[in-house]
Structure formats: C-alpha cells, structure tokens
Image 1: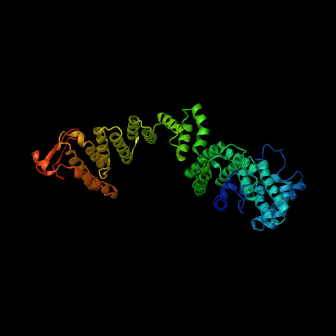
Image 2: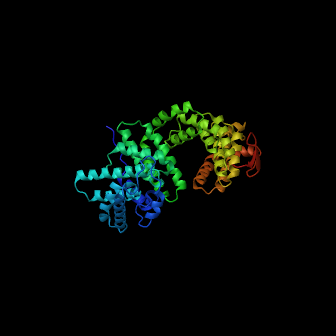
Image 3: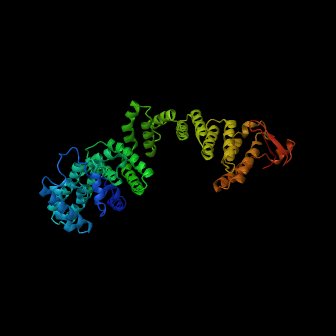
Length: 476
C-alpha cells in the first residue's frame, strides 16, 4: 500500500499567513481597502465581459437601479466601517440582483462568505457556504474575467487556495484549478498556488490517476516560475524562496534516476540537440546524483558540443576519467582551463591533470609541467609540490644504475616536500609533507656509499634522468 505524502500543514499555514500579510494588496486589489472603491470602479466601468449578455450594471429598470445603488452604498458603508455583519444583507442583494455593478462585490464577497462559514456550526450548512464561496469566485470570472484584477488565472488560484483550506481532500478539483491557473498565469503564478498544485498532483499520482512522469514535468515548470520570481519579484521574494525549499522537499522522493531516465531518455533520443532539453536533463540528473548514468554522459557531451562552458568541459573530464579514458579526460580538462576565468578553478584542473598524468599514465615529465602550472597560479598552495616530490620518489629506482644513483632522486623529492611545508600553512599539507620527509629520508644513501663515490655531505649534486634538478648530498 502506498503511503501518501501530505505537505506539512504548518508549512502551508505559515505560507498562507505570510501571503495574506504581505501579498494580498497585489493579488486581491481592493478587497480590503476602504478608500479606493471609486478608483477601483474606474477600472471596470464600460469593460463588461464580452462573453456576457449586455445588461445594465445597476439593474434592468429604474426601480432596480435605485434599489441596487442603495444596497451598494449600504454594504460599502458597513464594510468600510468594519461592520461586516451588517454589510451581509445589502451585499447579498447586490450579488443577486446587480452583480455587474462592481468587481468588488466578488472580491469583498469572498471575505463575507468566509465570515458566514466561520460562524456556522451545522456541518451541512458549512458545506453549503463552501459551495457559495466557490460560486462567488466563478461569477467574478464570469462578469469581470476581462479585467486584470479578476482575470481567470488569478481568480482560479485564489479559489483553489480557499478550497484547499476548507476541503483539503477535494484533490481532483484543486488539481484542475491550480493547473489551469498556472497555465494562464505562468510567471505571475502565486507561491501558495504553486505549492498546492504540487501537493494535489502528488496525491493524484499516488492514487494512480496520473503517471509519475507528470511530477517531473511539473517540477521543471514550477521551478522555472519560482526562480523567475526569486530573481525579479522583490515584493514577494521571501514567499518564493519558501516555496522553492518546500517544492524540493515534495519532489525529492520522485527524483530517482529510474524515473528521470524513463521520462527523458526517449525525448533525448528524439531531439538530441535540443539545448533546452539538454540543460533540463543534465540539471535533474545531477541533482538526483545520477551522474554515472549513460544518459547523463550523452546529454552532457551534446550540451558541451552545442554550448561549451568551463563547467561542462570539467564534467566531461571527470566522466571520462571515471571511465578510464584518461587522454580524453586531459583534453576536456584543458578545454575547461581555457574557458575558466578564475585562477582557483584553473588550479584545480591543472592539479587533477598532473595527478592523472602521474598516477594513471605514468608520464612524469608532463605531470610535473601541469603541477608547476598549478603552483604558478597558487604559490602558497603546497599540494603541487607534494605531487612533484612523489613523482621523484616513485621514479628514483628507474633513474639510476648503482647504489648511489638509484637513491639520489630521494634528495630532490625531500626538497619538494620541504618547499611544500614552508609554502603552505594548511595543517593537512604540513602534516603530509612531514610524513613524506620522514619516510623518504630513510632512503638516502648511507655515509659509506657517499664516501665511496667521492662525495661529501652538503655539496651540490645534479640529479639526472627526467628529473634534471640540482640538490644537496645528504646521508640517512
């Protein structure tokens, strides 16, 4: 049996409270503003919904108009005074008899209906009040859907939020409303609507009514909207930051390699050069730690060919290295270095090239060149010098023919370890350098061998072979 994942109620509640405190002016226009009724009406006069029959705003007859204007004035006066109980009856008359008089009839009407709901104790009547609230939203779209403040996408979002709060188990209508709202609003979609959409979608998938792939597609869509608002919506930035964190929490159980590959593998095969798709797939696979998959390799390679960046080159180098394609990896590391702007990034790539050339390819001279290039970029970092010293020590036996020359490379190696310890204050580097000094000093020639070959301690000595460095004679 599947376990349902319900979005933590405390998170949703905190988002609703924050939304109502900080964003209601933007999203509900004149809903609670007692001084802007005339200004609001100027936006709607003469803009009757073209899909509706042409009927008078204040009623069909002069008598209807007088009654409508009287009730409109009464309910507005009571509402503006904060006396919503007294505002109810005249508002109801306006709603029933001249709904096209003002879009505020519906904006404020939602607040009044929720008041009646909160006061009701009978369960059946409470359900009826919810139906009434939904009708208020529907008629707002019906009569004023052509006005920006009452556009369908915006109103559907607010309708879904209320339905989620009052009937949280009405998953299908909540899902349909939020999906339609986001389709219409796009980057204007509100943070709480996005969260409820994801929650209802997950419930639909877990009920077996939708495939899991819908969650992946929705995640990609809503994260683009959220990121847009984090970057551009300064007023509600904090709401979208919260939404991003919570969407990622909800999405995490579904972001498996299997799901991502099953959904995007066929799409990649159909359009392997679609940059937008490649960016999407590589990002999702990377976040899901699926970087060892064949799809990640292919999409990253294609993306690098079409839109090369230092990051894509570096990633290709790491993947080729993992596949033991070391020469290809070196080529990609060099591309990354050519594209990097930061010396720190270049240092890292050079050091990895040096280590690979040394340990995997056994190309000591080339490895030393990479290490020296890294050291030039970060003179106070001792790691390149440690690596060069290890190269010298590793090749010592290959660079000599007798009991002296087979051991002189250890002098040059210890020189590098000493340089590394003196250059770097990092405790890890200092400890490693000291350890290597103590280890390889034991391989120095003894005094008898030094004397036999006509040398004295302290004199200079040229280590030949590929090392070709001057050092000092020392005995163990």
